[in-house]
Length: 340
Image 1 (cartoon, rainbow, N blue to C red):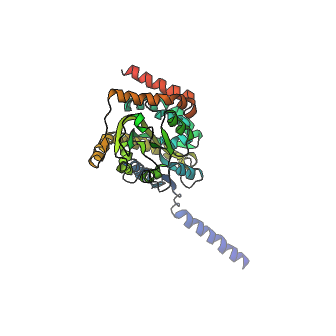
Image 2: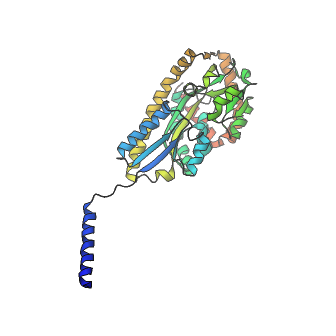
Image 3: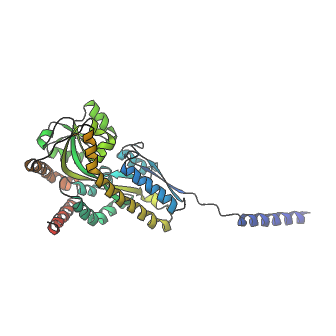
């Protein structure tokens, strides 16, 4: 009897093994990437990561799936980075303000009035990418694409045209960035540290009188509704990037990474062209809604350049590493010599 029982157990086990081998292999669990951004839904930046999300899902046959939290739902950029560090989020589409918290070298691309055109920015950034991306990887992040949000202009609640007009105004700077705050003070401004998610409230309560931002962001965030005056000085191009934590990226199957990175870079380039084209359109749209744009004379333009240069001794070494500042400045000058 014992012998018959053993035979049944063995043959039953073989039957189960056969059935298991006949069933299709269980699909691996998808890699989920949660991305946070302050960019509101419907904005060009949000639309870019939404396209990446769909293309990644298709290219990976559902193995890599992205969830996007836009409009500051996941917090401001500092909070998004904190959540990435603890694993609550894994990626971010972030401005130069957030990038600077990972690598101070990235601020070299945003030194006020150091670069004068998009062509110059592209020339410098392309040559600085190896340095910047190495620093960001050492900080725990892989760059999926680079981008920008347009030229930063000055907006104010009252008419202001030249730097002197802004001296007594409380102007927004990123929260918890004392070095950048010191640079603004060196240029004789009155910076007030405020998170991007709190700017609208700051304008409503009188905490802020002015801010510096690209037109597209001023429009999409509705900040211009309270700061109805703008000076179209090209203060700096607002850089940005989409990044993912090294830890989460390493979970993506190695054979998929190159294709997914190529997709992200393609969408970044597409977004960059779109955003740059929309800058002037955003200004025209805000003018229809009550924005007053104050043009600059050559003398007034020079006053802004002087104000920016006054901050360089603080920016070089204190805000941006000296070697990186000098490298970016040299590249900008190199471009101008090649393209007089």
